[in-house]
Length: 591
Image (cartoon, rainbow, N blue to C red):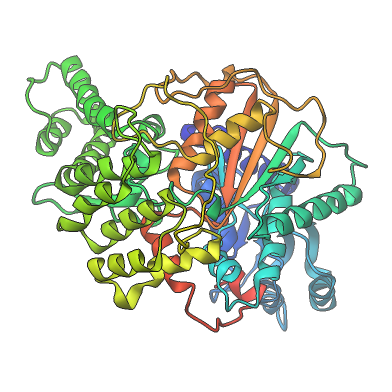
């Protein structure tokens, strides 16, 4: 594996694959073909490279759904989801004539009896191995996973959906495979909410399925491990996904069009280039959670260090200068290419910041935090909001500010809301605001309505930037959980975890903590957090910050998908589309 991937969830998944699929392959020295479906293609791509597979005597990787030439002298390995579409494609490879000498079949998850019997009926004489791997989640980063299902948001929160229960069942199955991969049998808790029951339902499903999984486990009955799984809904913190974040990763994914983790950029008069922002890029890993001010300062310094070591003349570091340096110093090309990508990306972020984001951030932070930079309480949020509405910001930016105003007051009046809608000119797109009610977030309240806002941890002593004072609510939860301070009335236990589950005293994960190596962390407990409806990059960052501060407890966070402010707003707006087309789990898994 690449050095950049050599830790966390990705390493765990790759080791699991090596210990089963690869170990089985090694029993014979012949080269083999690996056949994948769309999900397992993403899964393998997330944790290994083609060169890793070549080392394990896998000659070719093929797409299960594409037409393939028969290679009857070779053995085939099938790694696929247990769906009728995958099983039908597998059967077609051996009926009427076999394309391969034999097949080793590995399912990501439990294979239903009817599909298994179908395979046996037509292909029994060709199948040498058939195993269930229990990996139906994607390891996105060292401490982040997803269920690779952005559509779950619509199926859970749309009032027209008739597929909510099925979706929660599927997410529960995927969470069980995460726990199995980590070899954890956690205690399960959920955030209680009088308006929403999805977290409670999912907690019940996960707990029942986990118990069943470990009852059937070949290694014998498993006791609860030193882990805790917390389940919470997206409406629990509507502020974090809407704010403009100024840490590097969150800011880049909000402001720049990055698709499939690929950043496209151009040097002056040069061709368009593509850079993958993942954990193979150790500079990305080092910088992604830092404030953009630090990133913009650090990258030119790094380039100057390289140029000084090669006695290159000083001067302003620009993309063109870097191109010249690469020609003169081919040995340093890889290091310089890495720096070029981030110099360009940081510059792109700073352009947006200078153009409009800086002006928005003060108002957004004051509305979110409820006080200004000096700590003075915001008494009239409307005065904070008005300058944003009166300036020529984009429609989406104004919607985000209006939402922060509404969230700050736990709802607004019909009259006020109508004024906002007219001012932002979204008469035909009111759903951007109104549909938050489907997530249990108060939007319309009567003047007499009073709702107590949850109390937050005191962070006055922490060093922060003026335009980055907000802390995601989930970080409070992580710290409280690690310190065993979660209120059992607000976070009921679906199942108890061992009494010994606790962290290591006071946790204050400051933004500028000096990072230590992964190996410094004591092997201890795990806190797994699952957010129904998507996680933000700032919440992902919080998992690393708390882990870094505590060291005795690793925090892992996941969801159906990772969201950006734009993608969430579009999802919210789409909630009123309907009646929804009902897809089967098979169709969704292979769409």
